[in-house]
Amino acid sequence: MPNPILRLRDLVKSFGGLRAVDGVSMDVQERTLTILIGPNGSGKTTLINLITGVYKPDQGKIMFDGKDITGFPPHEIFRLGIARTFQIPQPFRKLTVLENLLVCCNNPGEGFISAVRRRTWMKFEEEAVERAFKLLKLLNLDHLWDQESWKLSGGQMKLLEVGRALMSDARLLVMDEPVAGVNPTLAHEIFRSLIRLRDELGITIFMVEHRLDIALQYTDEAYVMASGRIISKGRPEEVVMDPQVIEAYLGG
Image (cartoon, rainbow, N blue to C red; front, side):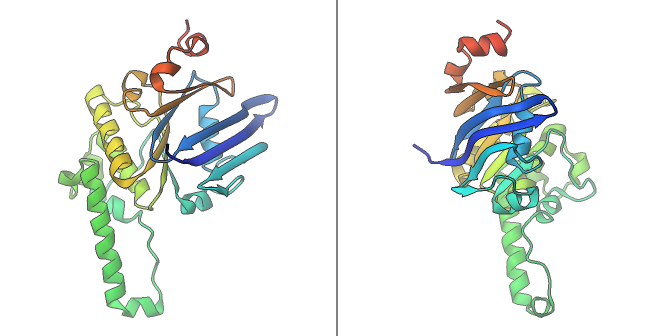
């Protein structure tokens, strides 16, 4: 059984009199694709914002790889290995697909000494290009490496966003509706690419998604939120049959 890479314990976040997240606890197992579903207004985006440091919880703990990261700012959480993608990709439109990845790598920067050590920075650049092409191949974008990003389809831009996030050597990828607005063929391709990343690079993926007809086919574990609380968890096929889920989410 994989080990939990992310642990949430009794998280609470309120906005005025509204408890958007109300005592949420969950474990995201390492090297899995875990999905969070629930009706609109259930607290899913707020929970993602807590995990990635956009919001600080009022109560509770967030543990990543055994480290307490509760209240850490977004840049520190990113540095520790949690990367996030958004529903609407924002690539550098005039840069090529490859250049979009290279500008997102962990560049050590320049200094007086490093500038004259040509072998050192050349080695770094060679390794960055090698990593970028490996990611592009896993994302099925390698044949588009020299295309300006504005020429990509919506689905390809979402895959490019994933590649940009992973150039930071992230271990946990937090995603907000990765197939929203994408046609079914490309949606399946996005999920197949995510599975390749999980299997070949050992990436853990935690996402919010509404396209259950597609997403649940690729999911290892599912959590369901309603009114700020987790009401069900388990295998996807078990969760969708839970009477609480049918009542709260499917409208049964």
